[in-house]
Length: 506
Image (tube, rainbow, N blue to C red; front, side, top):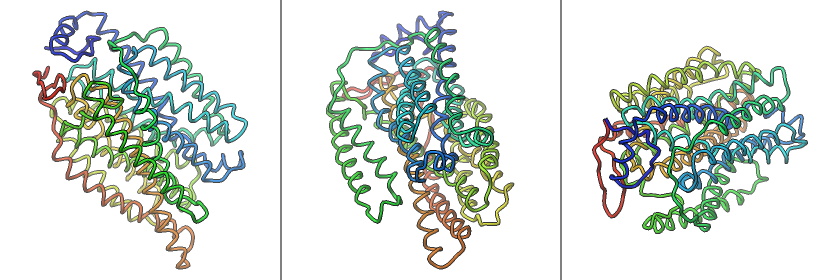
């Protein structure tokens, strides 16, 4: 059986064969497992912070004397920075070794956490969140690329199950952890408690993480970096302004969309030209794979649903049902834990049966829950919401591991880092889309009901129903797409003018 645990990340079948011949060295196996465990732990810590601020809005408004919109920017800026930095990681992971990239990511995250913990005001806190996000943006593609490089294809489902815990469970339980902290401590403790953990991971990584890739010298295209920043940054900023209170003017939103669209189009055209000489910042040949295309499209829908629900449910519980932050956090905890418990089991099922038997029922469950949530009222009970959230978590658990494994597994080895960067960027853009879509529909629906003289809590409940209804309709597209997902049956060594298939190591 061919083993991927070699450190080589090459673009030729001969080099790969040489790497495979040395894969049975015992210390390589132990080294690879240690590296993956360290990356998983570090990634969980950094990703957790993406949503940890979601139930702290009220406390931040009072303590820092800021508006709700300004407080929301602590989450929006985090996602915006992620979307700007992640596309660059495709280059970083090919240019530099594993260890220095890990140290850079954890150093940035730790520095940002420290800045946020001691921030004297809103501006410093926002800067801390941006620095945090820069480290987080590097960590996730590093984890996924390392897994794809080291783990044999017939065992990736199990390992990707653990990756799914990081990507889906960490943001899902962020509100729970922040609710628990805020029940007894101030918002600064959300960072003070994380800081020693982050520093410990940094020290362990500095001492124990070994280089498991073979970087190659390649120039960075500065124009691509600039276009990527304006393209993805403009798109996310525009999405963050959808439905925002801007004094009656929608000009900032449309300007951001226009700048983002022009820059993103220019970026994509430039990548198509640069990839011919293997110098693209983000190689778009990943989309030659039909499996990758379909999986990424499904990720857009599912990540939008996940983050839209994460944002909307706490708002509904606090404003309509008048639950405290700690109660909201505890109600969302069972679903997050359930998703984590199921992820490794789902990974084993993927290795044995492939993705379709998982993603088809998974999309159906997610769609069913969204349709159910579109019927909530001011009289909906806490057990009903907990049951719905747990069912949604089961559906998402059935989806993420197969989608990550099938999408990246369908790519050539020399495009793993680019595929990981594209998946990471897709997650951030999808999160912004889901947040903007759900919040905007809720705001419009609530405003229309208020205009009719409806009581505040009833108006908000009506807006929430409209938002979940919109998500439910869109989820039907994912149900259809699920039938077209399959497990890669061959490993493509590289893309030149055509494809060079290599028998899969299964």
